[in-house]
Image (cartoon, rainbow, N blue to C red; front, side):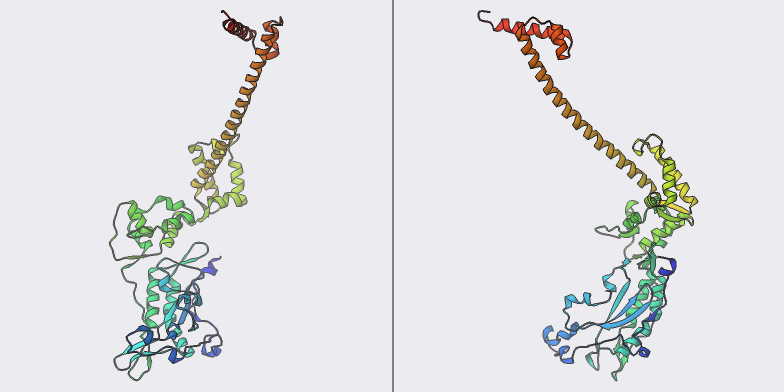
Length: 421
């Protein structure tokens, strides 16, 4: 993905959802009135409303490029199947962290209104009314698109404090009422300043530089993502929560933090000084420059398994210097080198296990052959056929004195066991 691919777009209503297009992409099918409203004064819920109250109209916003469109769901859809019929997730289902791809969010529209004069009433919007609502929210959508965080090479979306506030303004803009004559009224569009309780993690880092971890500067994307995804059983999570837990500090209650991944990526980018953060494994294993650097730096006559920490650090420093010449900074290099060495040392461990098993097998076999040889020597000695100790020792591949000692022990045993001895 290029920078142009992930750049913010312009808030707009999609073609097919405008009067000049004849609303050709819009097919609204509201439920009949008798399937919505039974008796507003009934005490029991099932007597007050019908199955049509499940019917939902929605506005969809693509936070990546600013596209806005609208529609509805079949009013006969079961309530538990509502989510599968929507083009994206409602804001309340997302939390304040990442926005899942493709970045489409849905604002459900309310249909029940109440005022003292008219009481309760239901209103389902026409395509023209939905288009008017979509036009009203375009400024807030543009603010959302311009301020939401875009993280990593793929530009994944993550809520910012300003983007979350812009969505609040979208919700405010689509909450309708009626005037005494029954005319549909919409609140005045607003641009709310980001409240103080919404805090950017980047600002938190700037205010607490002593809590920043030096390892972030050369951490991989996966390592930064894992740090940002910290979720304790209680208290604050994310980057501020993990930082303060490590430092045994407490954050006041009442704040919501935004941009955890974005802050860590920005912190690392600043430390890289304009060079591109690059995964060490990918550069060393898949690029021509990386493979060439690796081949040139291989320890002569040794593998990484035999390299001590000081030599491993020197190798990593050389790789980092070579990457700097390419305009890169290698992320996760030290961990990658240590992992390679650990893998090679594990292979040596496995080799030792195989060798030990083979030695044990051979020693068992040797023990069995020795026992067999001893039985054969004993048998020949028992013959007393006049052969000397040297003759038998040569056949058995053992020293003459061993056979002599053996003959003496055998003679003693025979004398001891003879009758009357």
